[in-house]
Length: 275
Image (tube, rainbow, N blue to C red; front, side, top):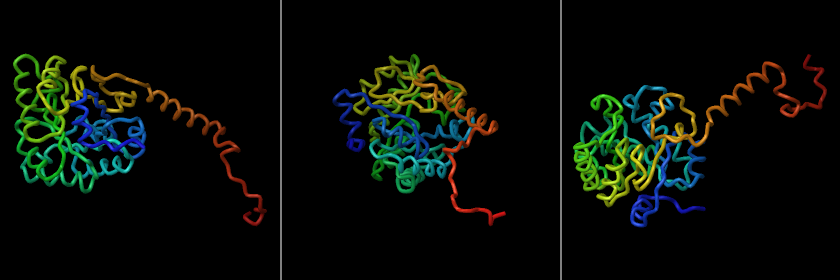
């Protein structure tokens, strides 16, 4: 059995130069498959608002929903580090709220770490959560919970804005985060951030020079037929395979070829008395 991945795995990978891998999961069955792939960490992302609940953004995802899905993923994960996303307004309002909700993701959701969006503005929350013995993964660049304030899904860290991202990255590190996700940032900016930080950077749409990469598995497998970001690589068209299988089921039931004899139970005793 592979050794259980922990926050120490991330620190060691940064020192050795080994690339880190993360994928999302939102339920027990997929968590088992993702875990068996050898991935270093599984993120129970608030992206479940999009790919599981059908919402146009992540804003409406609640703490109870995150706890529900994180607990299911944790039950299906033996080796990867399980990271639970902290949803909108679960940490921004106050430091005590942030600590309480991070604790809920650990205690009720069985997460082994939490992720929250923002840089210097949430450094006090990160520090307090870490002080409460909850490992924190940061998230800077494009932060979907702030999409309305940002004016849409736009690449961050261009030109002079790269200096702001550097300040945010350093603030997240100083506050005690063990790693930071960098989303939708020019590759050159992400490279500079990665070189400046002593904690690992996990890229998504941030080029090849981050210390690791993360993707939403629905995008990787072609399961989500909505907008596909430029940075996504589709490794399989599982959506087409699944749709064909569903269609074949419908066709066989309507034609009477399913279930066949091999799918049925037999009752050798005399059933005349049932009529």
